[in-house]
Structures are given as C-alpha cells and as structure tokens.
Length: 469
Image (cartoon, rainbow, N blue to C red):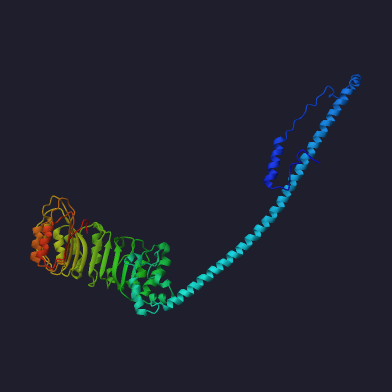
C-alpha cells in the first residue's frame, strides 16, 4: 500500500535517506480545519430545531469522518516514516559499533607494529654500533700509542680558560673526551696535563655538586702546576677547596672582588709557585689593598697584569708594591703620568714586555733613562689636545737598545706623529726593531715609513692600525 511518504527508501545511502526526508518535510504542511458549526454547542435543549435540521448534522458528521480518514492515512504514513528512520538509525548504530570495534582492533595492531618497529630500530642501531666499533679497530687512531693520543687530546682543549669547567653547560674537552669510549676515557683521565687549567665559579646554592666536580678535576691534575681563573660567583668554602692546591697555582686570574670585604680572602703567602697574576676590574680605592697583597708575592713572579681597570698608578702606588717589580718580565698597567712610566721602567730591570696606558694632562720635566732588556713596548697615550709634544717628550727621555716591537697610539684629536724624535730614538737606541705599529689618531706617511726601514735594517713591517691596542 502506498503511503503519502512511500518514496522513502531505507536501503539507500544515508545522504539519499536524508534528502528524501527533507523533501517530505518541504511538502508537508499541517492545517487545522475550521470545525466550529452552529451545532457545536452541546447539549442543545431545542430538540425541535435539531429534528428539523437532521440532515445537515448528518452531512457534517460525514464530512468529519472523511477528514478523520485523511488524518489517519497521514498518521499512518508518518508513523511508517518514523519506523523507517528508527530502523535506519538502529542499522547505522550497529554498523558504527562494528566500525568502532574494527578501529579498536586496528589501533591495537598498530601499537604492536610500532613496538616491533622500535625493536627493529634498536636492533639496527646496535648493529651499526658494533660495525663502527669493529671499523674503529681497523683505524690508525685506535692503534695510536697512549703517549701520542695524549698529545692529540692536549690540542683539543679550548683556548679560553673560561670554557674549562666541569659545570659548563656545553660539554667540551677534557670532559668530552671521557665520554667517547672506554679507552679514550682511560687515556684522558690518566693525562694530568688535561686537568691543569680550571675556571672556578660557584655559589652556596650549588656548592655540594660544584665542590665534588672541582675536587675530582684537581685530583686528576696529579700535582702538576695549575692555571686558575676565579669567577665572580663564589662560595665562602672556596678557599678550603683550593687550600690543598695553593702551592701548585702557577697562573691566576681573579676579580678584584676577591680582595674586598665579604669575599674569601686570598693569601699571597700560600701562592709559593705563582708566576702570572691578572687582576680584573680595579678602581682607585682598591690600590692599597692590592698593593699589600702583591708586595708579599714570591720571587717566582714573572707577569703582572691589571685589565678592565679604571685606576692609574702614581709613583707612590708603584713603589708600594714592593720588591716584586724586580722579578717581573711582563707587565700590563696604567700610570698617571710619563714620569710614573719612567719610574716603572726603573723598578723593573728585567722587564721584557710592557703594555702601558699613560695619562698625560700636563707637561713635566723628564729625566733620561735607558732600559737594556725591554723587547716589546705598547704605549697608549691619553693626553690633552692642548699639549703640543707629549710623544716627543717620551721618545726623547728613553733609550731602548733591545727593543724589537713598538706599538704607539694616541687618543686626543689633532695628533701629529713626531717623526724626527722617533728617528732620534731609533738612532740613539740602535735597537734591532722588527715591527713598528702606529694606531689611534696618529698618522705616518709612506716617505716616513721608508726612512724607518732604511734606518733600521732589521725592521720588517711598519703598520697602521685604525683601532687602539
């Protein structure tokens, strides 16, 4: 039997069923007919009237029966549609359950396959590791004697001591060398020279781990001379860690903070083997404390450098450092005037290399001085532009018969190069000069350069630097 909605085909696709339902909804419109009649009010006491219009009532009843049949027919069709949709939903749910079960099974299978894949990857890596290991057995590097491998390891060390720390986040040699293979670890650990340089920096928060790492590093140096740099972060326990090794410290770079209050004090009497000392970040009021420390340093001292510094040493300051000057061969410092520079040369008879900043704000008489051992001199002159011949006065005051390298720079504007005075210095000193470098605001001509070369046969290079040394 055809219903008003018999075009619905539940065997079709979901999209077809939905399209058919949308067509049914579009055509369906429920209109409630007007059912009110003159006889709708009941009961009616005027029976005579009803008897007279009996046929009209019968006709109304017949009409209502026809309307009822139509509505029942529509309900039948809609109920059929509802049953069909319910059947479709049930079928799709059943299908969905089957699909979900299949998906769940496939996911379980996929997990198993991934697990097998990971096992195969690990197998591949182990095979490659074994293959590389056996290839390494054929390598000449594997057959190198321990002594040769140790020398190669020494060339792997970073140039800057700042990178030589067990706490460095970027692992480098020598620590990195202990993580390659068992033999490399044995060779690295048993090569004391790899562990003789160390950057030390730790605060109390991480001291326990830091102390263990530093102590292990220092023990591996096995009594060799040490080069240490002490960073700004520190622990009060630092001195107790270093105390057993103080007599082995040969090179030391330290911030001026370690000489100020609240810091672990360094004692010069403990540094019996110290040869090189670099102090960073001094200001003028630090000079008395530093001078007291330096005056007690041993006769092993050979190099003293003050870098990143603001102070300038006067003649009195220089004298307060005591007898250490007589031992030094290498100095980097700033002095307050040219006479302090000459006084420094007098204090250091064995000086071979000097890098000096000279403040020059007024003209002073200068006595002549000859230094027989100075081979390398770098002068940076900080002077007033009102002074007319500051470099001339310096050149005329000194004789340097052993000078091989000379670098000169002047910071003030309007600087002129004292060519004749430079010629006089070279002629007077009769030095074996090999390199002359002019920097800062100073300029020389090609003709002047040629005259220097002709005057000093040993002179190989006359350079001009745009920057300060």
